[in-house]
Length: 177
Image 1: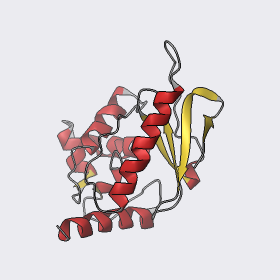
Image 2 (image 1 turned 180 degrees about the horizontal axis):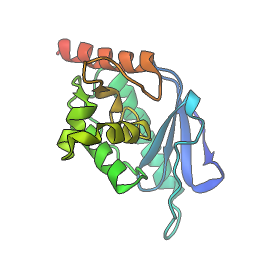
Image 3 (image 1 turned 90 degrees about the vertical axis):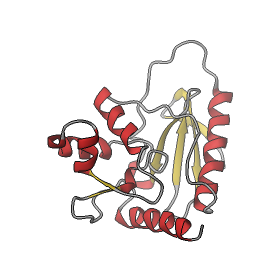
Image 4 (image 1 turned 135 degrees about the vertical axis):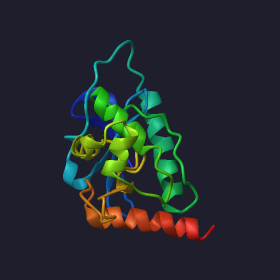
């Protein structure tokens, strides 16, 4: 696997990783993992932040190595939580929504309405859905664990088959413990 600049941004590094749900491109800054891109994403989910101070590409490379190792453990069924540093870029509302996603337990699900209620306003379920759709850190920030109010699978950046695979994988890991 080779690491290279992303969109000519010298502050970001990327690494392509084959996975059971398709090829993933991980993007990191020196502060943390910035994005997990699906093949269909291209690089549109990568938000560039203003760099401050010196650029530490060695730290970005280290973060990518940790993220790749943790994803490997996740797919092998050996990891149920991630602790790689994250560097999401979004609005305050998006960041709040993405923080809520990280509270959904491994193997569990939450509806958009439940997520909106957790954020303090059940009427914001559509806005929550929109923010989830812009989540740049799939799997690490588990938007695949959000389902419709009827429990059915709804949109996902990697496609519904990937979402179903991730949920089944997590349930199978829990069942085997």
